[in-house]
Image 1 (cartoon, one colour):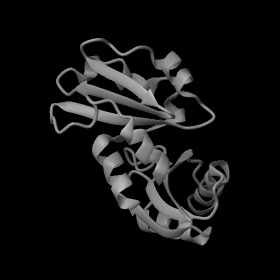
Image 2 (cartoon, rainbow, N blue to C red):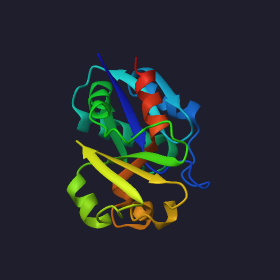
Image 3 (cartoon, helix red, strand yellow):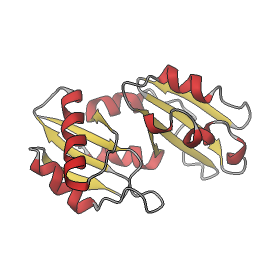
Image 4 (spheres, helix red, strand yellow):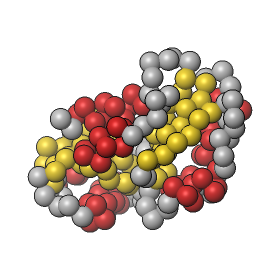
Length: 180
């Protein structure tokens, strides 16, 4: 049995796409996922499953969200093993304790590719932000002082907005810890 994390895109943001985490937990249990828990209100579901096909896990997750909450929410699934491997390949500058830096992990939702996201958003603005990637995760860091001047802060208004879901470094690290 493998541990997974479902990352839901765009729920509970500015009063839109409201889903209560206790109800989301129950919904995931109803489709046969085990050891289900949620973390914070942004749509992070940790669970175990014998199903190894991520596409099947995504389809089941999206279907139950549509059925129970009447919302079409994109979901991406990452295994605990894959997330651990991705974080092992994070750049040294990402996820530090520096409170002046805003560190994010941008999870690209298939079938969109990392290359498509880079093409839509563009290169990092030198001196304002740093970008690297491993697999389907883009590591992005920017100083809080100049955050509004960064190119990647505009991802929410880009053509790939609905093809990514973003978590800060603290959340990503906590999610991995919760899979242990």
